[in-house]
Image (cartoon, rainbow, N blue to C red; front, side, top):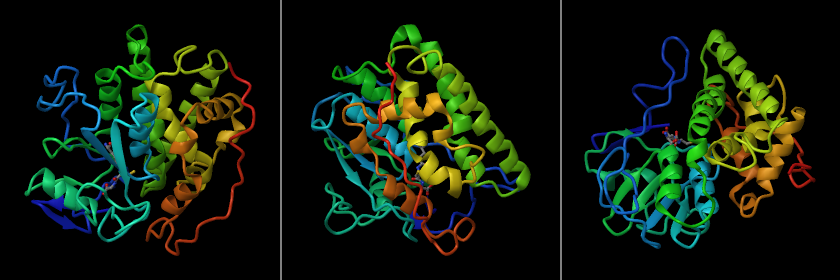
Length: 319
Ligand SMILES: N[C@@H](CCC(=O)N[C@@H](CS)C(=O)NCC(=O)O)C(=O)O
């Protein structure tokens, strides 16, 4: 996808993510402010963002796993009424993420037709990638954050409602799972799918399955990754699991096993899917459309496979 350079959207990124060594590197997020309980500055960025209901808006896309994290945090923190959302159309275009004039993919705040118009409001000379999710402050009319990990953490810390996703007595355990899962699974599937050499692909795909094997083992001993309670690291794993068999297995060549071949992991994924509100954050058909959309390197003709047929609603037998 493209990039904004000094406020202008370029359809072709002059510095693509995959470099000479064929390895995919994800660009760092650029907008890193935090909503905090008292409006003081968070770990990064500036202060001034207090947790009032109705003040914030999320720009998302159904197919994006990072946007899915933010949507799940909104669900688990029971913020559906407090934080509004708009969804970009789930397909690649020359203009990056776009919105439609009306319907499910309309943009309600500014009537923008592309996400780069929102980024141009962040700063007229904005330079960086034009990614979802973006958390927007309606009151000050500025972006709070475009980093999904921060959005999950700040929703948990700033809002009293819903589930506690980061219990202090599990913080180290959660951070350990987060860092392993981010590099080898959440981003690992992209490192496999976007690799431009056999060597880079081999390394990435091996790591994906090494970590899934480790998780399978953990889930034979505990209901969730850190014990009996669902926490932030489970939330961050779920978007990758939801896309695994319908998209990554085939489109990103992560095909040593399917999610369904792991008895504990597959039951755990269904356990999460069946938690209140989670199924409403999932769109399997859209994942397929998104990951199999025309791409000169991965799917030149843009043909979307018919299967697989997967039943996520069967009994999970956990807990
Ligand atoms: N660090 C970001 C990454 C977000 C990200 O890469 N989103 C993808 C969609 S899955 C995107 O918008 N890509 C557009 C682009 O890179 O041009 C986060 O986790 O919030």
